[in-house]
Image 1 (cartoon, protein in one colour):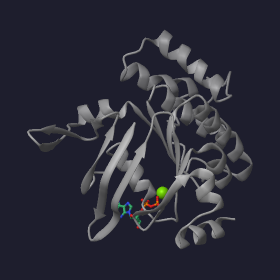
Image 2: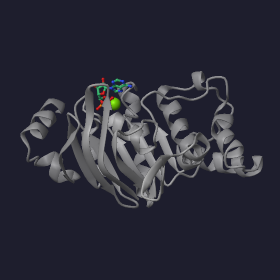
Image 3: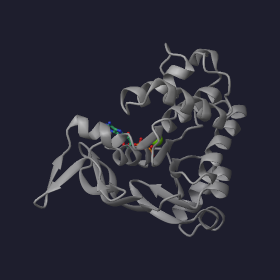
Image 4: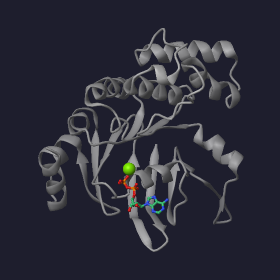
Length: 250
Ligand code: ADP
Ligand code: MG
């Protein structure tokens, strides 16, 4: 589903990603762990070309992200092509970025109608199904500010799913939440995982990663230090940097 090869990214003189290789299979849940500043968000942003790589390539379902290859040369996609490619990749950020002036139903149905060309009936029916999935049935008419952070984040997940993505990227989706609201968001993600969604999740929730992820990747200073089956990496890390990080987290 995802293949990243030699992904590098620099901001000026600062090299933030130093050659990341990563494969994610269909239906797999991969958690990306690592200290703050290690390049996790930058990598996620490269996966849907919100950030332009300095070197390397990423393919999703065999299609190169952000570029066309013609005669052995890479040409960057135009914004329309990028938008079309991004439809297949859902992203949920730390801060719920719902449209504050729109109710829940509009937040979820707008993009499927405008971008996918779905009829209102189709989009609304799908939104109701998704609201059931995220356990917010009946909250169609609520505005984001009337909802708790956990509820807003669940709407953000429903909104991403409304575009019928093949891959979901999560960047610390529970880090901005009050502790008592974390569980309800993780529960929705767990449900998605069990339904076979392919997911790449940046998180500091070790219990979630251990239980839900198929694989864990530990990143530090722009490189993958260690990766393997979730329990193996979390319970018996091999590298000193992974051990130190996990010790700080417990
Ligand atoms: P993480 O998500 O693991 O905390 P980030 O990918 O956000 O790490 O950041 C990695 C490094 O890249 C940090 O040193 C950060 O300051 C730097 N960085 C991220 N985005 C930019 C940017 N747009 N311009 C300059 N530096 C950036
Ligand atoms: Mg980050």
